[in-house]
Image (cartoon, rainbow, N blue to C red):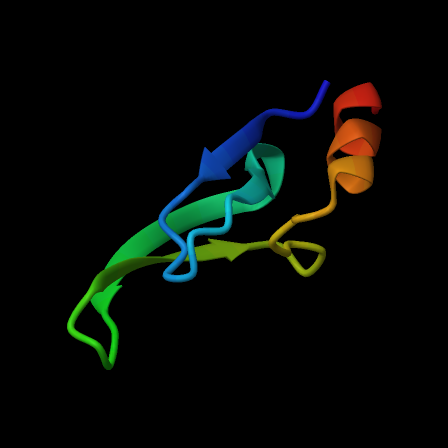
Length: 61
């Protein structure tokens, strides 16, 4: 089963989800608004997942 990380720090209030198995590491940077944001580094299939359908598929694998 995939490990899903929920990150609710999106500037527009969206909840962002990541497959933890694909994350190698992350670091924090200051964006152009002066806010601290996390930059996640992973493998080539790594992406932010916002679709509940996709999250359910990840959990079922």
